[in-house]
Length: 220
Image (cartoon, rainbow, N blue to C red; front, top):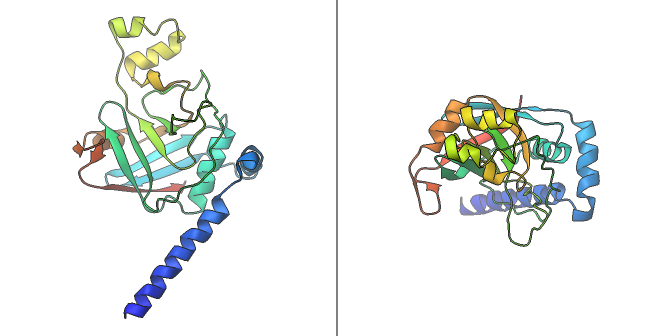
């Protein structure tokens, strides 16, 4: 029995190693590879299946590299076994795969003043250190819950945002401190109440939930 288990374990390791090699992209080819993939794969509708229910997402075609990368990871099955590992109640929920495959490439920054960190925004995380261009992680993403901005807080934002975006931050809320630093490449279209429930779970340590909250992602 032990020999069989070891064989299965080695096969599993080989599978993940092979997947890693297939998904890895040389950094100098990232824009070209993802750009071509974006042309050949036009999907924009995504479903996030969580322990608390389903969340529907729309990916922006205006961020072709991030959309293509996310679709590519989904089709490869990268998010079949995933979990939210960082949760801040009035800020965001962040997740990635439980396989912990570390890719070497990053996605070129696609931030835009037109795509802000509003309530329900989908964005890609990244390391700040040694990343002056704010390029994105290929795997770690987050969904914004944020907070509403009123009175003095809203006044401080008036020079940075047009009236229609200020209205969003006032009525729905968001996390404008992240704008220009992290790429927003989609938004929740249905199921934000699920994200709110997840954002309110008890956490410990570095904002890690006390109980693991699993999810998987598929194209709709």
